Image (cartoon, rainbow, N blue to C red; front, side, top):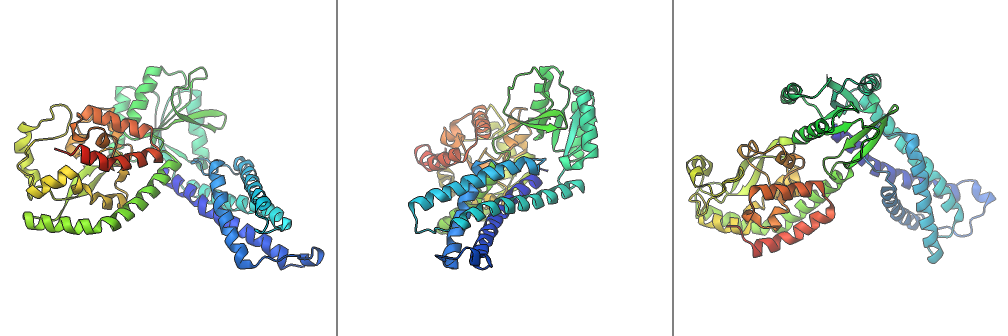
Length: 462
């Protein structure tokens, strides 16, 4: 599963850091505490405490260089010897950076032996650390842990070869759970039944000669049901998607990414969310207390409400909000549907909704009622930025294209909230959220977060 791959990729960072520190310590030990000192007398001995502080800083710098060098790319079938060249290049780039710094800051330390030894040992230690981690990862996949359970579609030579390779070599990371010779209405119906009863992670299309319309139909289906999509390409076909190529045996397999968050971006965004939610909860805690007092004295009922919402992968979760309506307001919603002002789309909106309390009206206008969602962000159910979280009844009315909104975690704010808020119709809101999913970056998250308070002040909700 994706989580296993993310786990092992994330583990590369602390393992690399540890190996770099050990390599530096080994270089220091060889230079200053072994019989080598009799052959190469020590002219200037750097104190260990000072050396260790420099070593930690250098290790952080090298991790950054490793990231630029692509050593933390998410891969299903991670191969040691394919990474060894990148390890050598990245360590060499790191040592060159150290040499440049030493040129300008000679008081750093001047032991050429330590620099040369640390460079060689860093390559050895990093290679050993990664080799151990790869062996552990392959051992888990051989035990059937973390395999991508796939639906294989096709009756071609490529489909037969892939099925044989995956069956004979689980370390490739795939297990063919179901197989179909073609994709038609009957196949689509069967796959929906499978998804309702069993876990499947992706669809692999292994028919290079299949009509492009059917390929697009399968891709659309995979996106709608939150499945990864890989396919064996037509040799003469155009590269019309953002894809990642993987060689299984002698068969090229292309992975169509649903979002830029597939891969290392998912880890970066989650770290960003955790840090942001913790800081937000600490800073805003006095405001939480003030709002709680106003709600309690304004009307009967709890301070917080837990609302059923649909999250990533169509999973249900309880979203926290400050209560802005009378207690049990959801029971009255059916009686008010005739007054729904949103004729297009699945959402409900009504001016002067009688269920909203006087304090609740202020909270909604300023979006302060949504602050408790920071708890959902910390729990991993939501993100600081993402598509709006909708009710199950609303999601059931999504079109196939709109189901792509469930690809990532819903957010406290998003592109629609800074582009018109609730004045947008649902179709436009969905288009903006889908654009965000397809073009995500941490820079875009920061822009949306910085613009959100301004949008609240200039375009308050009604």
